Length: 504
Image 1 (cartoon, rainbow, N blue to C red):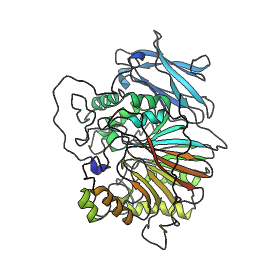
Image 2: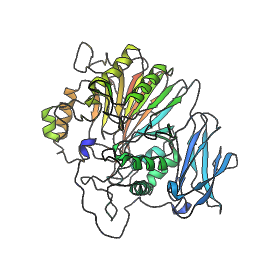
Image 3: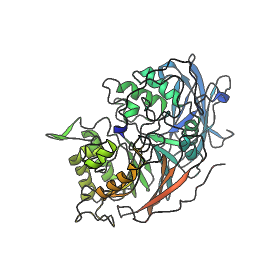
Image 4: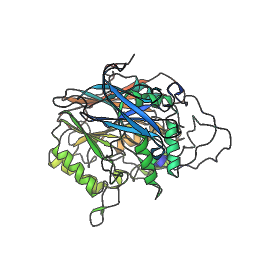
């Protein structure tokens, strides 16, 4: 969350560069030492990506096959890696079969091959099931990316949704668990952003997840340097260069919001409140969260959706996290009313316009997936959480949808932020009493969540993974169910996870 970021920087250490454990090039596949990736799937297309070690312009061959040995190549072509895009290349592979797993690779003219990547297209028609993993807030200096490796190993996860802060513009001095010898500098130019993305791709766990799963991503403030006027354009350029994203609006690359249709089962609507909040007014003196164009687009997509579920990928908490002077005193965060007035809570009237539309148009099955907060929340969506006539805390009746937040992959949570451990249960207890719409909260562990979707229900599961060492450990914490047409979380939670299909 934003209020954990405002930390002083340590001075730059002048020393020869050395890397911590888990940070290295994939030299076995040189010059493709940064791996491969796929993203932004449709029913008949997917983007494939790689980067070669910088040299002169290089002609590459790409191949897509239905088998991992490439005896059944369905498409291939050539592409040039140049300094213009920092030797990153992307190709939008069209004309593929729906709901199909493909294998892809890149090669040089001298027959040096990249690692083989796995990509998947979206299903169409009558879809009975899909499983998503949602992640956010991955500081490479804060700890190991074990959670990425665990997701990569899961055969039951179809796609990965990254909800922002994929890279960080600076390290948090309170959480320096995996530092190179040369202290990282704050990103201030296109070169800096490219170097930051390149360094991230030295992480073997990140490379593995990019190789194994097809991604759908959105940026947040640490990806884009939005708080430094004039620098956002360079950050956005590097983001598009290093992530496999189909740019929705070539004339306006800042418009990253877009939709993915998963047959008649779900529409996944990725929104961006970061670059547009507070910049336009929907009425005199009334600030818009999403900007007028995106606001209209989102509401049109929600109303026109014929899918069973409407999933919204969202950077920052939409539902209120109400606070108090006591919580502010214990944590030093927030304004004593809400924990973060910079998110949707700072625009309550505009948010209520969205809630009213959902309620009046009887738009059921809205599930908001949120990053940024670094902690785990399961929440009912209501603009009046303390009005007992409009919302029933015990049953959830009166909610117009549900929201859940991902724990961070590694970035600071309450425990990491230096808040005394004895205070955290008290903060959580006070918070739960102040927020009757918070069905469950957990403030101290890192990891990811999965969302298992069928026509009858969505099941959200929280998985926690250590960050201070390289480990294969992970633990299932709990799961929650929202049934189709009910629009609130069931109060009983799952103590056992759904079966996990692991890769060999």
